[in-house]
Image (cartoon, rainbow, N blue to C red):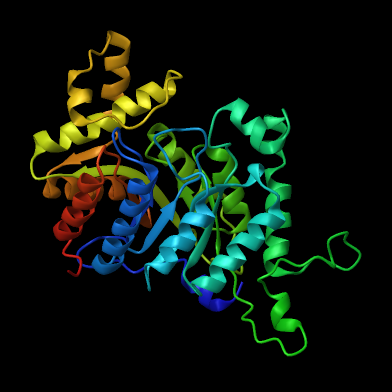
Length: 364
């Protein structure tokens, strides 16, 4: 990886934010809305994020979920690259066991060619879906086996990205294109730069692996809050300096939504909580409207789940959200906060990112 790509791993906090603020976009589809609507909202958010000084805009791979239209991160990122100029774009993440490493290297080499110097490749080992769908994606029933192969798959992917398989390796004559091989070909002028690799996780496995390899680490605090501090501690304890990073760099994904008042914020985040409840109980669907969420009659166990879920969602007025984010950053020592705003309508999500930017004094 070249020096420019290494430098881009670290962001610079803007305004009065203690660390860089970024966006995690799940491309959610609300009841009465279409995937086209959701993708247009993604463009609106990316443009706003770029204008207001957010550092990155990542999209996450999910499958067989009616309310999440991000099954093809590389396609979405190419679209966002065409509508932005400066903001970093990336995957948060691509689920490596679902794909051949060469395919990912080609996709993200293409993205790097489309948006030079601003593409991140975040990788996870979970399926991003249920077991049956994962089996259909991978054409195998060995889901746990695929996850266990993750370090080997990661090493292979990095070899393809760097085009440095050793002589005698079966893949030594195979090249991911676009990629570094174009710079070494006769007459080649292609930059050898490639996207920086991040490891994503919600437990200790990827935390330890990222530390041992000296890679930046992104933790899914937004759905695994109880594991955040242990995983970050493990990452930092395991960290070994590398050509990529001299010191650990940890980003956390956090669910946060700001609105004009606390009541409206509560109405909006309740839609995401009900959607998650349905997903966890085998009833995935579109994101319900605030009216539907308010009218839903929660059973005792359902209420317990929703209250627990909302306890990890930072929501309220812009100042309340800022206070919650600042407190979370202090408790975790995160080097970057990546905010995901889950709500029914695109308008509420766009407005939330605008209000948070205002609260931190990010450039207008």
